[in-house]
Amino acid sequence: MVDATWGTGEPPRDVLGPVAGPAAFDDDHPPRADLVADCVHCGFCLPACPTYALWGAEADSPRGRIYLMNEGLNGEPLSDSMVAHFDRCLGCMSCVTACPSGVKYDRLIEDTRAQVERRHTRSPRDRALRSAIFAVFPYRRRLRLLRGPLKAYQMSGLGNVITPLLERLSPTLATLESLAPRLRRVPPPPRRVAARGPRRAVVGMLTGCVQGAFFPEVNSATVRVLAAEGCDVLIPPSQGCCGALSVHNGRKQEARRFARKLIDTFERTGMDYFVVNAAGCGSSLKEYDVLLADDPAYAARAAAFTAKVRDLAELLHDLGPVAERHPLPLTIGYHDACHLGHAQGVRRQPRSLLNGIPELKLREIADPEICCGSAGIWNILNPVPAAELGDRKATNVLATGADLLVTANPGCLMQVASAIRRQGGTIALAHTAQVLDASIRNLGPSFL
Ligand code: SF4
Ligand code: SF4
Image 1 (tube, rainbow, N blue to C red):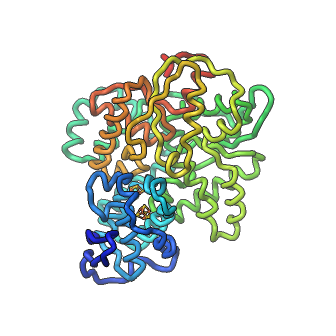
Image 2: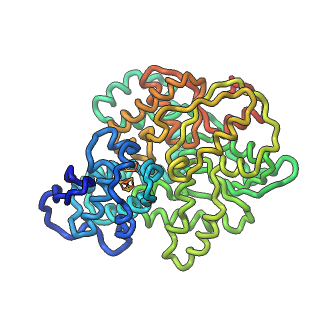
Image 3: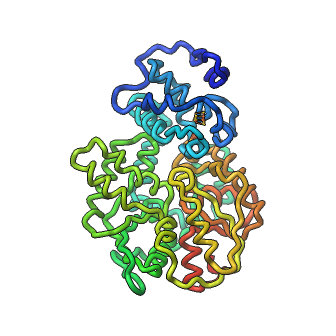
């Protein structure tokens, strides 16, 4: 634990205890000491941090974690306790938004996590779980293989028997089971879709792993909206994972492999923009220049690629609407995915697009800065606190009285849907693209 005097002006005591061993970090991109020093210990970030809200412990706050990074830089070993406090960080970047000193916590935790993954020996159970996750999640084809058994399971009604058992035996498996979305069959998108009307841009589109396998209807809505707004859409079927899950979990080499392959796939397509409809993917794509900065063959190409990356809402907002919007008499709650709101600063654009739909009313959700607990794979690795955060979010969502919850990340959709079901509530859920698509195609509110 970190000393309670940390941030009060008194010199902190080393309360991690005497742990022998090599210093926490080696010379391969440790958390940068100058960025650590930017923290003035004011504590403004604490109320915005979900793990501080859960546990009220300094070491589980942004300021406490920065203190631990500093301890590591000063030679403290990478103890199990230190790693636990880093692991508990959701990477939601709410603290980055809240910090008046502009501390780059995002860079700090990313570098710290890479050090932890290389230098810390995890328990056999943790290693096995992480290996299983990373053997499946970044691979759309492997995820798609799960669709058949999952659909059969959902239709069998076995969930009534198995869910309570899993809840007792394994919170991790219970979480995976509860997160699984209702699957819809959608044909894969063509390689190229032409703009309707005069062409205003050529965009490459990321189909994503989880989005592509479990939410193909979001991708098809995205393609239709882009085409309706005058974009030629390029969707090479050979595209792979963007590496977001890997980079957010300290697996930088793996993330670099994915990034290089994605750049190879798209850079000669002639695209003006690279559009992303999943917040977590978009935030890491916008940092390919940092991820590949040390790679002489890719650094400049990654910088050129990064400059073209846009979140879907960002691009549509900048282009301005040309397709007619038809009324959607609905009340919606808009949930800011952390990697869209905090990490990319995209809050205004989706609201503006949604407010442009006639008869649609938008309601704000209380405590919008606090994460829903999804955070990539955090909810699988930390099922119990993730469920608590999910329940808080679900309560705030249901309190809006909205008919529909709209967000821009597949992880959030699954996490909030699961928490709302747990509370016995009902609310339809949709991606921003699906709402725009329903309005442009005049499908009416019952479609959503
Ligand atoms: S990224 Fe989120 S969970 Fe991590 S320290 Fe910042 S606010 Fe807390
Ligand atoms: S708000 Fe910024 S400067 Fe203040 S304690 Fe948090 S990270 Fe440090």
